[in-house]
Image (tube, rainbow, N blue to C red; front, side, top):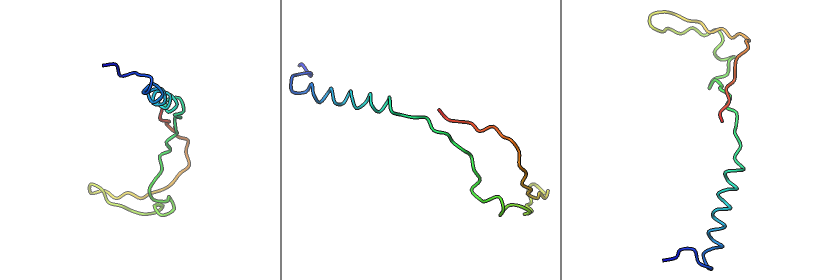
Length: 69
């Protein structure tokens, strides 16, 4: 049984072409980690963890942002 006939060739060509277009057009995107709560709401709050108390203090610093590929 011959699957590629004169009638099915345009459909198969379309499927292969569409697949190639999707593969070529994909772009990598950058993921930026963020807090689910704004920093100003966390600033100064005290929490207890494992019998110790911690207080949040926001500070500017440089960090490495990873990108996904």
